[in-house]
Amino acid sequence: MMEWIRKNDVLYKAVALLAAILLWFYVITVENPETELPYDNVDVVLEGMESLTANGLVITDGAAPTVDMRLSGERDKMNKVNRDKITVTASVASITLPGEYKLSYNIKVDVADVQVTSKTPTQITLTVDRLTSRSIPVNAIFSGQPAENYRSQGYTLSPDAIKVSGPEAVLAQIDHAEIRYDLEGATASVETNLTYRLIDVDGREVDTSRISVDTPSVKLDVDIKQLGSVPLVVEFISSDYLTSDMIQYVINPSSISIVGEADTVSTINQIDLGDISLKNVVENNIYRFEMPIILPNGVTAAADTPAIAEVLVTTPGYSRSVFMLSQNAFNKAEGITYPEQTLEIDLFGPDDDVAALSEASFSVVPAQNIDNLEEGEHTLPVNVSCSNGNIHIFGRYSTQIIKESAPEPEPEPEPEE
Image (tube, rainbow, N blue to C red):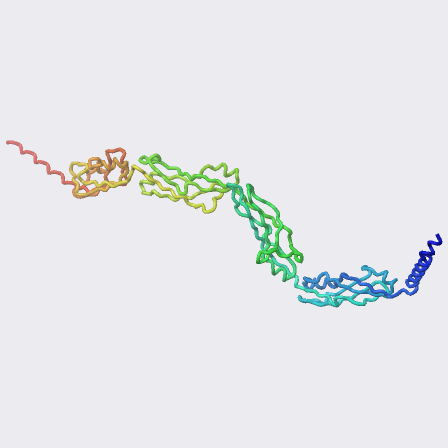
């Protein structure tokens, strides 16, 4: 064993190691040499922020500055240094206007006899902007379509504008707030709260990290209604000479689209435009009617629906006509004659019956007693009738008549002697 120790110089090596340890201990405990160490990315505390805010300003760049430094001191002192012992401060209290500022800062090390040997950068740089507020409109963008036979009848946003606060330069970028909603397959009205994005004029999203808002979401209400198609109808009031089975008519439009709640739309099977008098059709020669479309309660008309419907009436096989009747057809009576004249008889009836009329088909009789008339020419009302019961005569008529003088009575014969 001893031979091995001697051959390998173990004893000498052990002595050398012990001597080194003793020397190191001496240097550490007796000599205590100066040491320099780096400390990087140390946070800078900004003082006077209350004053900055009171001046309506906000830091837009450099709000969380850091610095690098090197500290030196005796080794035992440096062993006590850590980040909690280092305080770096800079004051922003003197800043009163927007702009870029370079500020000096102070470093305090809460360990005695430790010095700052270098610092980087020598000043910190801040950009300050004015703190302001704006009202930003909210826009809604929809995708998809409601289910078949359903329609969106509009929407509301609450609020329809939001208040944003932040640096003036940042707020100047904002054009509007934007929400998006998919209406695909919707069959009922929508009520939901949605978050929004702030969008610039080019459609890009704006960074909101330095912006505060008065509300985090917007309430969206979309009115979804069912769409239904219903026919328009009209009622005809018959007259003695024209009934509803004798006419044809067209309603334009024939039907309209209505919008409403499903349980309301399902109960409406037609919309009544009102009544048309067939007597009025023929007597006043009116075959075209404009009738307002009045919707039932609870529904509205779809877009582009007219407010007025047009009803066109025709009387196929029937017509209104004028027959020229001369005085030769007037009824004769004792003591009167008729000067040459013509009556224009306004009549209505089947086309075949009208075509078959002749003067013999009519009777023209004075409508008052002619016995008490004085001699001479008179204008008298007359009653005009037609032997064909399918012909209806309109209007009132009068004729010229001549009351003849009464014949001289024959003289009584003289008595015979």
